Length: 121
Image (cartoon, rainbow, N blue to C red; front, top):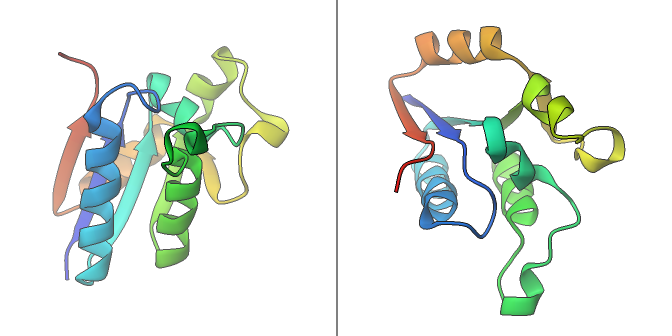
């Protein structure tokens, strides 16, 4: 099967782009594709373990990402994006890899499809 890279730059609970990344990733994994998710710019907030989706009776994005990681997805975050936003240490779950644009470049070159969910309206 193929490999898909999804680049996520939106914060949790901000737009449907986060939900699209989760749903596309689940569907791709269930059909045998390899999936990588790169949390970029404000997208690094999706890894915060302090999120509370239960208020609206939904899972937190962190829980959804953990589930995708258990299914075999590679979850990466831009280390620089995290550091300049004050995220690090225990704020980053173990299943999220600190990487940079060099690794993003490698993932991009190695992927059959790349979908970017960054900004816009």
